[in-house]
Amino acid sequence: MINDLLSTDWYEVGVVAFRALLSLITLFFISKIIGKKQVSELSLFDYVISISIGNFAAEMSMNLDSQVMNGIISVLIFGGVATIVGILTLKSIKLRRFFIGSPTLIIQDGKFVYKNLKRLKMDVNDFLESARIAGYFDISKIKYALMEANGKVSFLLKDEYNPVTNKNMKIKPSDDGLCANVIIDGKVLLKNLKKVNKDKAWLEKQLRIKGYESLNDILLATVDTNDKLCVYNKKGLAEIKNVLE
Image (tube, rainbow, N blue to C red; front, top):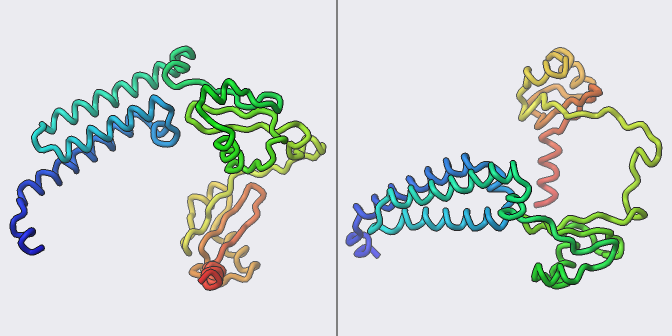
């Protein structure tokens, strides 16, 4: 192994490291240009673009016989095409259906659309697995199931199996909004306190009422739109950790 290290062409290693770093930087900026959608939910077109860009980046890093600029140009072209297609599909439904695809019905009114299953090359076992992952173990409760353009399956339950809502029960919903984090890891966030029209004196008073004398014991504290203060302490977290261990 020592002989291998001594015989290593460190200049070549340095070149590969430089090219790898350059390809990483290029990929990062291309991903920023394309947008978060490309990363979070891949359609078939997005998948092809992503795989191609990844191959170009790997080739640019490892193939020392090729020019770095060739790889950069290839990544830029594919990234540019993806960006242009993204803009066009926002403006045209027809182009969106062509490049991105459209949802396909798998279950309609509680019945399988068999021809669509065949077209999707999806057997019943694959569908049942998707249903279980989504939390539906009894498919007789499903009214509609659609495969989205990104390959995920969406479900709509039959009316009798839908959860009861406040509207069904004619109950006025509470006016709950987003909670503001006012303490994180023992540090008071004064800007967030100000957003909920509170100050540090109010916070300290509420903490004393709840029995907290030191901020160091508090992992997280939040205030909701109803001025309700919730405190999560480090001691409780430690106790849970001990139980798990």
